[in-house]
Length: 369
Image (cartoon, rainbow, N blue to C red; front, side, top):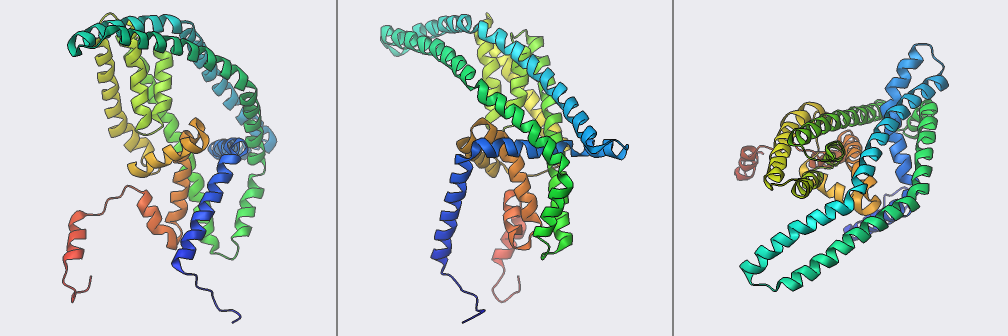
């Protein structure tokens, strides 16, 4: 019958949904070399857009305003990258020595374990020698692999600024394009979704940047006070890893603890590092995140961990950093579309009152809920 809506059975809808998700995930994985730089460019463009608008309002030509903004951004990023590479180069030169010192610690530990658990020390020594060889070989192969991938990294670094420039330049065109696509929908709702999405991304990324700077400063200060080698590199890496929720914090504290064990005479320095990082995490979680980051977007811990793992499986390390901003965008969209609001509520961290839930389900059936 013409005009009659076709009602599909639930199992057909479920199968179509699974097939659609599988196809979408396959596209994201296969086209990651195109999608990942483009997403980074979109996020950076949204973050820099207020600066461009500020310059344009000062009667500066739009192309010139974009060029000035990108030049200032490039100077900041290049300075930061140069600092990290100089520290990483110093660290790589000391890598074989660190492996040797770590081997000595392992030998001492082996003697204690073999005596306490009555294990043949020769088996443990053979395993340590093999592990040491693999560590050095892995280090060399990793450096070689890094050099091989420099070409692709340089290409991405060239593409992202170009994407950012074009997105900023064509911002009015892209904005009107989105409005025309949803012209038949509620224009006010569409404008609100677009505006809030852009605002959430800007504030969220700015909040993450401020958090990373503050955490890096605290990490570096703590490591310098304790006299831990490579304090600047470890502090910066710890701040960057801290952006990845829960998982990053564990890796961030493990690295300086290992360096402390290898380079210091007393193992207590590793515990001092752990205590310092724990105090920094308390400050970060109870003040910085609440005041700066969480006020911009609130996503519960369960989906934060899941989306980070999914991002890593799809796109590796870049996916781990992109996962939370993308999930924040999805939550904003869900929160402004009536049929999707329950999903937006599920992604958030607003816990319903347990007392209200109990009262709701314990009411007699003849009473209105």
